[in-house]
Structures are given as C-alpha cells and as structure tokens.
Image (cartoon, rainbow, N blue to C red; front, side, top):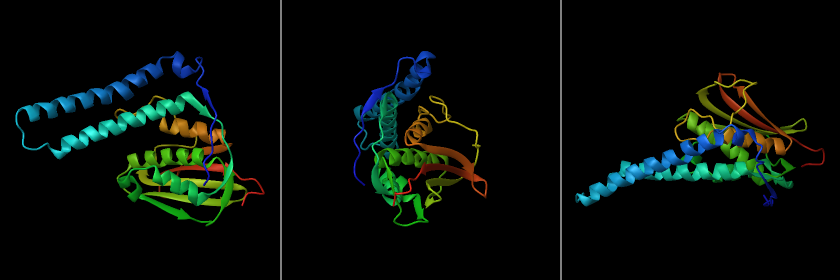
Length: 231
C-alpha cells in the first residue's frame, strides 16, 4: 500500500466542540487526569526508593506505562481532531488496509485480532492510510469492550467494499446511534475514537454502521463505494 500525503485544514473556531466548553472539559479529563495519576504513581515509586526498597513492584511499572500510553493516545486524537485530512486515493488491497490497521496495535492487541477475507486479492482506489486508521480505531474500541477475540471480515461485492469488526460483547448500539465527541464511559478517554472514524469515513464517501450480529453481539461496519474500474 502506497502512502498518501495529506493536506490539512484546522478545526474552525466556530466548531460546537469549542463553543460549548466540551473541548476544555475533555482536555481536563483526557490530559490532566492521566497526568495526575502518573504523578501520584511516580511519587509513590520515589518514596519506595528513598526507603531503600530492593525492587519495584511490576504492577506499579505497568500502571505508569498504561498512563503514559493513554496520555499519548489522547494527545494524538486531539491533534487528529484539529486537522482535517484531504483524501488522496491510491490503489491498495483490502488485505493491506487490514494489515496496516493491525500493525498499529500493540502486540497483545494484535494477538486477539482475527482477520477473515471473503474476496482475497480484492483491490480498491482509496486513501489507504486514512481508511486503515479509521479501521484501527474501530478495532481498538472492540478490543476495549471485550476480553475475547475480535473478528475483522472484509468483503467486496455489488460495488461496495466493507470492513466489519465483530466482538463478543452484547450489542448496546443501534442503527441510529451516533458517536458524540468528548463523551465516554471509559476512564481517562476523550471519546473521540469513533467520532474521528465517522469523520474520516465520511471524507472517503463511505458509511459507518452500528449493527448487531445474528447472535446479538456488536458489529461495526465501514463500507466504501467502489468504482467500476477498481480491481
């Protein structure tokens, strides 16, 4: 998959997220909260070392790393929100898009992602990096909703290319549900993942759907219109 270059425009000052104060509240929750937790953990570690502790508890180190990862992810999402990419279509395969999305996950996350292809070798003209980033966010959301595996199913038929992400968590989303920026039930999250996904999929003239599998589990699907001359 070739890399597309993006031109960027900045989020307008009239954006509702800036006017109603939700961005400021999200910054406090998504940046200050993990920073405060990180500071508290580091102070605790420092006190243990001053008292001559022979070793540092692994759980404390894991806690520090989690807060650092969360903080970094929140900063990246805010940067992505502030800059609107301009899609640059290039030829790439559905498999390349899924592989790129999986490669951006952590090692533990990748082990839980199972990819299934119903049309091997299918290729489309699309901004591959932008689409794979959108797919990665959907996969991350599914991984956080369950401790089990997450299935990614790609399909190309009837003028459409689809990427369905299924997990075994009971579905709480319906076809009319839409993500709301800066609202999340998860601690220290900005609630921007699916919002950014919806925005970017829209820029690709695609659709983001929230469905249920036949067994009642969660299914989030990205669908992209395919031109007749795409291979």
